[in-house]
Length: 218
Image (cartoon, rainbow, N blue to C red; front, side):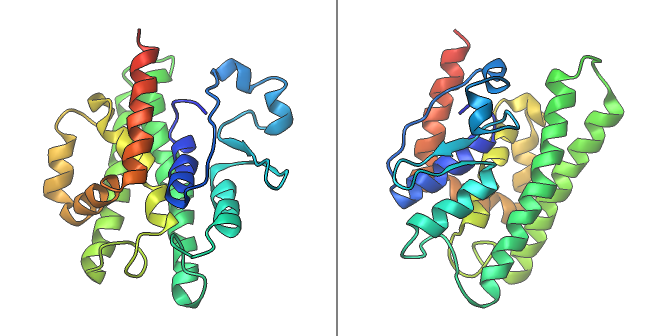
């Protein structure tokens, strides 16, 4: 795993399902060479090796799908029939195609792009962050439900947590005042995020993540 937002998507599901696991932290250069590229030819994290089944998988959404199919025998994080089964997939697809890329581009132009202070790009992706949160807020307001699908927390809700955590740490990702903006302008989405973040599995994953981040700064 690394400090990026995708490994926690997998760790949260593992924690929720009570599946024991070990993590291996990796530096970016090591992801791009053997032996890791034999595990993931794309040279990215997360990837898993499951000793129980012998399978090796990469891409966070594929891993989550596998974990649910293999270990969520009580369907605690998913619906397996009815419209809810497919609505989960819609929200997961939105997270993969809408949240992840746009939030990632905001981070790229803020922290990593060689040309600094490209305001048009930074503003564009900041507005996309607001748009994505607005979509979630409108949906929750319309349904009056506490979660995206049905009446329970599913993997679709949890998939959004890592990038939303990243919005608020470090503060400069969307500005120090963004938490207040989120709470004021998108109250349903804010309450939803807080509800998810209070889950023991989520708290544990991000407590550990914060320790890793702070240790890397020393």
